[in-house]
Length: 411
Image 1 (cartoon, rainbow, N blue to C red):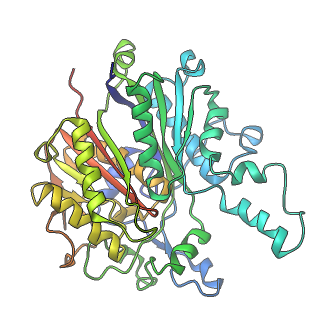
Image 2: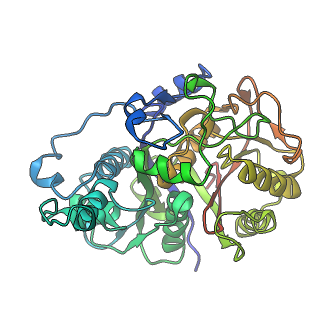
Image 3: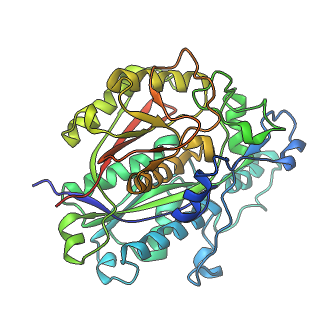
C-alpha cells in the first residue's frame, strides 16, 4: 500500500541566510549574494573571480573536536542544517529515529576538495606527509550522509546521491520513495556543497562560468537573459525531514507540505549537452506520479544556471509542458549555483514561498533570450500567487533530470 509523505522539518545554510526569515528578507531586496573573490586572482588561468559563499552560521555544542574530526566544511554544514531540521520537526530528542525507522538520503558533487589536494600530493610532491587518518573519510563521495548518520546515530538505510546538480533533488526524491514504499518511517534528505576555487576552475575550463562581471558581481548570474555569460558557484546545505503521514499526525508534527510527485530520468545522449525532450518527459512523469495536470501547478522553480545551452534546453522543455500558463523563476539568480545543495535549498525555499504566497523573481533578467522558451518569467519584482502546488526542477551533467512536486497538505 502506497503511503503519503509529508515534510515535517526544514532548514538550510545558504548564501542568503540560514533561516527562512533572513532568506525571505534578502529575497525581497532583489539583491543577490554574489561577491568578488580577490584571493582567486593569484591562480593562473582562472577567468571567473566571483562566487556566493554561505552566510555566517553558528554551531551548537554538539560540534566539537571529537565529533567533527572526520568532517569537511560540507559535512559540517550538512550536519548543522540537519540538526536544525530535526529540531524544527520535533525529532531531535526522539528515540525512534535511532532504531532504524529513520534513514538518510543526501548528496554532494564529490567529497572534500581539500582532501583531494592532500591525495594529489602523492603525485605532485612525491610524499605521503599530507595524508592523515581522516583524508579518505573526508574525500569519499558519501562523506555527508555517513557523517550525518554517525553524528545523530541514525541506523536506517543510507542513500548516497552523488549526481552533480541533481544530488539534492534526487536525495529528496529517493527519500520520498523509501517512505512511500514502506521502507522507512522518516528520512533525512538533502544536499551540501562547499565553495571551492577548484569547483569554479573546473567549470571555468568548460567555458561555463561567468567571466564578464568580475568587477560587477551583483549583475551576475543572469539566468535566461540575452546577456548571460555563465554560472556563478555558491555553497550551502539544505535538509528536509520527510515523514510518513500517519506518523506525523500521530505526534502532531508541523506539516509544511506534502511530497506529491517525483521523477528522474537520463538523456542517454551526451555528458554536457542537455536534451529538452527528456527534460520535458521528467516533468510529465512527475505530474503523472502526482496525478496532476500542468494546470494544477501554480509555480515552477527552474534550474536556471545561466549557461547558454542549459537555459535554452530547460525553458524550451518547460514551455512544451506548460506553455505560458505557469509563472517561472530561479533562485540561482540570488545565490548562484550551489551544486549538490541546490535541489534541497531550492525545494526548501520554494515550499516556504508557497506558504508565504509570494514568489521571488529571477533577478538580473532584463531581456529574455529569444532562443529560450516562451514562458511566464517572473521579472523585476516578486509576485503574489495563491497556489496549492509547485514544481522544482533540477538538471545535471551526465543528462540526469529531476522534477519534484510539492503541494499544500490536506487530510
